[in-house]
Length: 147
Image 1 (spheres, rainbow, N blue to C red):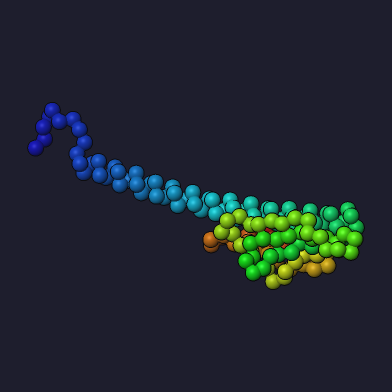
Image 2 (spheres, rainbow, N blue to C red):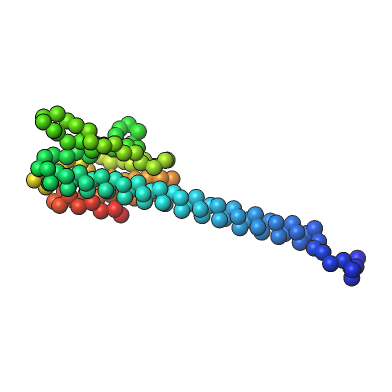
């Protein structure tokens, strides 16, 4: 029943169009969530790298040991410590981004005032969803590398 005066869309055409728009919106939303996970993971890795690097530089500058302790059992935070006047002093505390945690075989990294790394884990892995960033601290130089 094609009426030459009818100049609209059929119901089937509208349903097909709405279905295609829905599929595209769902795909966009999934990609956006993946980007958010990746962004939070990268930010957490950079924050930890910055804290470790600052501890290393402060140890050399002030000629005393600095320690970055990894909080357990929740594996979501870390702290920077030093010894001032014979007393262990917590300088700062940090937390990883939401739904991000880390795994490491050691509980801390220790930098000596001479610039030597006294204790270092093989690596620190930061995990969010199915994505992972690996932070390696070179024991000879104290350099921090994100992979």
